[in-house]
Image 1 (cartoon, helix red, strand yellow):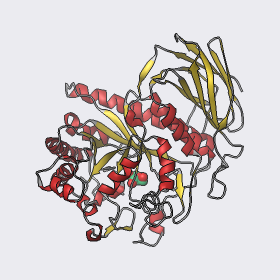
Image 2: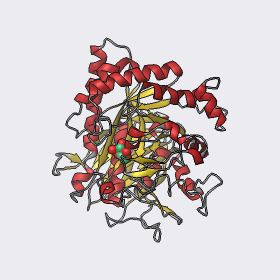
Image 3: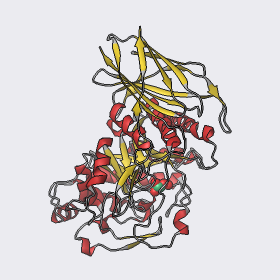
Image 4: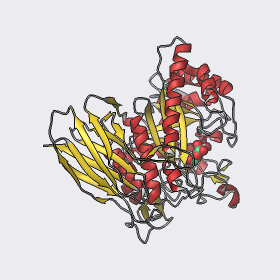
Length: 501
Ligand code: AHR
C-alpha cells in the first residue's frame, strides 16, 4: 500500500485534553454492578462486597470520573430508595431493563467504590418521571455539609463529609421513544433549565449537563438539541451526546468508517453552539459531554424482552467483543481527541459486563476483551496537548462512506515532553506504511516504545480459559532526521511513543 504521510507541527494545537475525557459509565443493568463490580461472597470480595479482581482491571484505566446510575435506568429511579440501611431499601420493578432492582448497591456504595479506584462521580437525576424538587434534594443530600434534612440524613447514613459531586446530568436520552417519560426538546429544555437553576441554588459550584440527542441517527437530531438549548442555554454547561456503532451487517470496512459519523456530529453540534450563542447574544460557552460511546452489537436492547422478566442481575448486553471492535473503538477514541476543543467529558459505556470490555463470571474469574487495551492506552498516554496533524492517506469507499482514509491518527504532546501518536490501520489485509514528519520541536527524540494490538483473525477474542489470545505486543519504528517511520499491520491499533533524547 502507498505510504500514509502525516505532518505534526508543534505550533498547531487543537487544545489540551480535559481530565474528564477519561471516564466511564456504570448502570445497574444486567451484571454491570451485581456479579460485576459488586459481589458479596465472591472469593475476591472485600468487606463491602467489592470484587478486588475487578478493581485490579479497572484501576489501570485511570478513570477520572464515572457516570451513575444511568442510562435508561434513571428514568424511574428514586434516588432515596438507594440510601440508608440496606434491609429497608425497597425492591422495585426496574422497567427499562425489565428486572428487579434490589437497591442493595446504591448512591453511597458507588461513592465508596469510586473512592477505591480514585475516580469522581457524575450523578444523573431523573427529570423524566420526577421533578425539580427531587433533583434539588439529591444535590442537598450529596453536597451540603449538614444542618438540613437531606444532608443530615446522609450523615446519619455514616457519610459525615459531603460527596461534593460537581457534575450532574439532567436526565438521560429523553428524546428516545424507549424512554419512560420521553419528551420534546422544548418541554424538556424548559424543565431542565428550571432544575439546573434550582440545583445550582443549592450548590453554586455544580456544573450541569443537558441531555441532547441519544444518537445522530435519531429523526429528531439535531432539532431536539436546538429546541432544548434554546430553553436552557444560559443555565447549563454541557450538552450530552451518545453514540454506539455496530457491525450488525458483518460489513467490517463500513463498520471501521463509522467514527466519521461521530466526527460529523461533533462538527454539527459545534456549529449549533456557535449559532445559539449568536442568537442569544451570549458570552456563555457550552461543551460536549460525550457521556456514552462504544461499539455495541446487541444494540436494539430487545434481548431484555426475550429473557424472563423480573430477574435479579439477569445477564444482559454481554457483547462478545473481538479484535475488529478494538480498531473501531480506537477510531472513536482518536475522534474524541481530535475534537478535544469541544468535547470536554467522555464516558466509555459501560464499565463491567454490559457493553463492556471487562467480563466476569459470577462466582468465577474475570478477564478483558480486546478493546480494553485501546481504552487503556488512550487513558494512559492520551493526556496533554493534542496537535492538529496534516494527514495524507490512501483511501477506500465503503457502503455508506466515500474517501475513508486507511489511516486514522492523532498526535498528543504529553506533559512530560514525550510525543504519543495513536494510529489505526483500517485495512483488513494490507500493511500501511506510515511516515510522520515532526516540525517545530526544539528537542530531538528517540523511539521509546511501539505498542501494537493486532491479530490475524478479525474475530479473535479473549475468554476466561484463553485470556491472552489478543493482547498488545511490541512493534518497531525508526526515527531519523525528524521522520518517524513504522509499518502498521492490517486491522491494527498502534501507539508510537517518542521521548526527548
Ligand atoms: O448503555 C445502555 C443504554 O444505552 C443506556 O441505558 C442508555 O442511555 C442507552 O440507550
